[in-house]
Image (tube, rainbow, N blue to C red; front, side, top):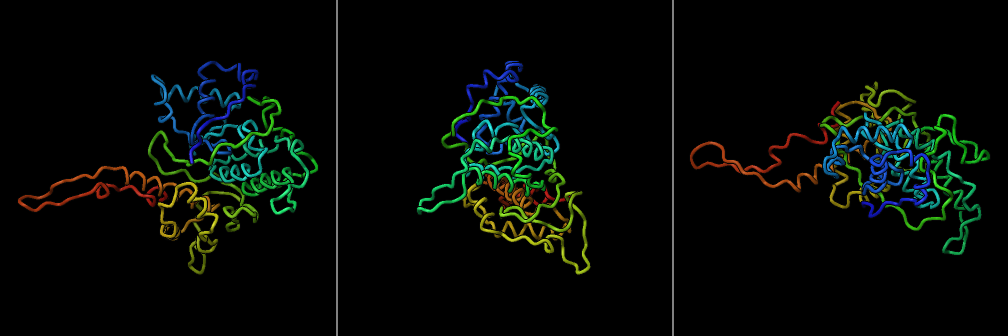
Amino acid sequence: MARGHGRILTSIWEDTDFLTLDEREQRLYLFLISQPNLNHAGLLDLTLRRWARKARGLTVAELEKRIGRLEETNFVVVDDDTEELLIRSFVRNDGVWRMPKVMGAMVSGALEISSRKLQEALLAEMDRIPLEELSADPAKLRNGTTGPSIRQQVTDHINTLRRAFGTPTPDPTEGGNETPSETPSATPSDPPPQPPAEGGPKPSTRGRAGLHVRAAPAPAPAPAPSPSPDPLVVEVGSEASGSSALPATPPDGDAPIDIDGLELSDAMRAWALRTFGPGLDLDYETAQFIDHFRAQNTRRPNWPAEWQKWIRRSAKFASERANRPPLRAVSGTGSRAETHTADDYTNSSVEDLFAS
């Protein structure tokens, strides 16, 4: 479900880093913050042509220049290969880290990231969350019992994200707000401590709309994560890193996807229903997904993440077919006529995009 608003802190107008930007760069940053498909992790698809249509006279070249400036000043992190953009300090500035349930949604949104560069940037931001500001008192549950504290719940979500991205959990006694050495010392748009925010942005529905038509980029290489309570993160094979599509022909003839195993879990169904509604036949799409990678005989570092990409593209194609007007053509001579629909002239498919 798309967000209905973007949260801008008034303290941004006292931020020296923000004030060094020119008016056009500031406007672009506010534009990115208010995008309806911005998810809880601060992730956006890099859709420059679509954004260029939001202002008269704005061009893709000008947008690239302004985004480059925002990246130089550490407001955003961009990966042109995967066509993704991360608003670096979004989780902290939007107050996401103060609310355990929203942090859970943040982890789900972060799992959509294909770029290793963006994954590392987000993990660095997790190190800067001031966990000591969160309550360590046991949470009171509705049934009268107690549960993990807010601090523990948020810590658990951060650790889940680390396992998903293949990063060891840090020593909890060291605190959670220290800035790692590789993180730039400047912190653009970092506000003073704010009270807990009510509500928050709603999960996004990400749709790819790049600058040109090409096969979808493969996920960036990542170490195989250890088993985690997150149902959408699984350990696959024995590869710790390397190509996202590793040819493998086992002795018994099974394809890598059969060896690794992929089952349509309740969590995967819930994600698809929450993101796209009940219109997709998930059992059919999953069977198509498995058949495709059996035929390709290739391995992916994270099968559930690859499945999510397949489902997103299936939903996109279904939407395009639903909105395409019917076409009619008459072929041959005499009285014989053939009626065609627009689907007869469509050659692209999800399988085409995933072909390697």
